[in-house]
Image (cartoon, rainbow, N blue to C red; front, side, top):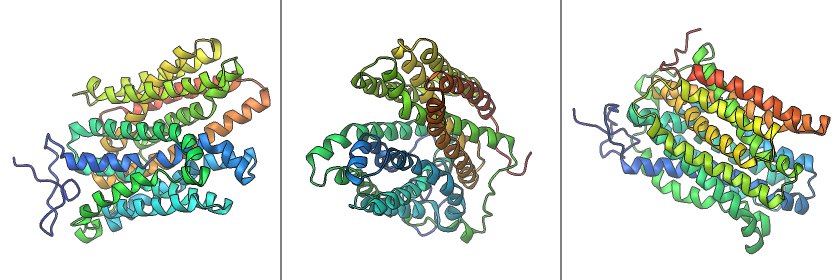
Length: 413
């Protein structure tokens, strides 16, 4: 059978986009490059804020509470915006919506860097909403344009790109704030370089990307009544909670047990490197395997074990970070892969991804705040870490269900 590319995977010469052939074994280099450019924009403007937060608070007069809100605001915006993406994609088309999201991301990034506290928060909301669209559209795009047996490999690739650019942003934002004119204001905006690079690549892909309504296609409903969809959503939420909680509090946990701040920072970096490595190797381990229950459950248990080590033997921080990284990297790739694999079509993938990311980021937003409250109430990390261990066990159950080789039925109970 001859392979025919989709309107997104290869910009068509004709006006009518051909149908996607999911039996293809080859994914075009152009499509992979375009996906990676979008992935590079999904975390870069967010992860640099943490390292700049002391300078932001000092320069703008924000209290620590307002600084915490600034860090949590993107997750809350993800949760509020994600359910809207499937409907918008149905009306306007995936490529068109991605181009619009990239343009809005550029505008929000510029607004956030202006010398005004109002612009700081308003720009954060705007760029976070744009990123939420990219978060939901990528799984739908992959489901539409990539052969089924290549979905996990492509998902791992874009997660790796997303993680690398996020780590780079964490590392370079503070040095840039000391060298560029405008201090932290300019450093907040450096990620716009990826947006500017992505726009010209995606603009030609708008040709032939027609709204689904023009072809008489029925919009896929959000699968609220599907047990599998809820398992995918809770797995997404709990793994996100574990990641954002570790990023927010792991250095503080280590410092409270006598680790220097420099060493604690390097341990956080080590944790993210291990996670990236584990996520990039996952497709090699799961090649040809459609049932991924034990991978999801096992990776969740590794994360729970990492929190157990921090709870009972905090001096073994290298062991803890290794376990957390191995489990977290696998869980992230699987959580994003399930949003494509467990859907029967691109429209259903957008609906499932919207549900999973709305619930997921709402759950994730509660994590750092909850642990902070528990730590303040007990003046100890014992109860917060015990809660994370329990949540890790719950994540194993959700991952076992989400990893089944089945597809979501929107109307099923």
